[in-house]
Length: 304
Image (cartoon, rainbow, N blue to C red; front, side, top):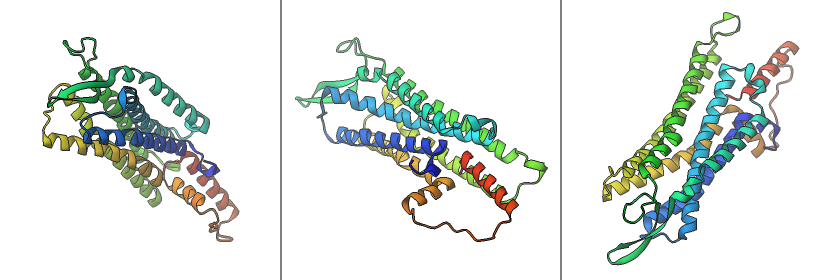
């Protein structure tokens, strides 16, 4: 972000998304893999609680960064003038900080709801890191797992996805039905831009919905004992986990490298000595001023 051209609300959100997704992969993938491979939990009770807590925090941080990015794009397209004083770097940074603080605090109950337990299998004692659900005999003071899992499904998938879809539908309606200044028909460049935005929106929403849906459904079904544990169902669950991880790997790529402004600024960071291609005398003074205004407006909006 040392490059001034990279400092925009959208790019700040892209970097936050990349950070959240990276942390999600770091705290989720290794421990989930160990949990599948070993018949016991080797990291102890404290780390069991911390891993589950960090997985939830980073998953929420990732998905609600997507919501913030949807809101940012919605404001830029639907309210381009009115949102100039709202879509600032300072406000974006504040929104990111508030989002992280709220998630970190609201996810604290996850620490109490998970822990290491000992169980006997084939006359051998094993340990497992599990949700401490209520059991009349062994854990009467436990927690309601179906309620927890359904709440997680709603707040980390269904509700954010609904918000993202609504904002993007409104944005696309404005893009395709909006009237150009002077009532002129849309130019070929304008139509290409609209198609580009539409394609990006459809891809982003479809990938998020597709990657997270299987594991979310499986976790809910398991919580209400509707998911039978067999060799095939375990493989399906592993594949579903991998799909969710894939989404975290794809998010920064989708949002960053589908953005023309981000790509240009990124190339300048990687190849700072690359000269600008400017044809002398290409624009008259009036055309140059018009071009500068257009470029400034585009950079501020940072849609693509």
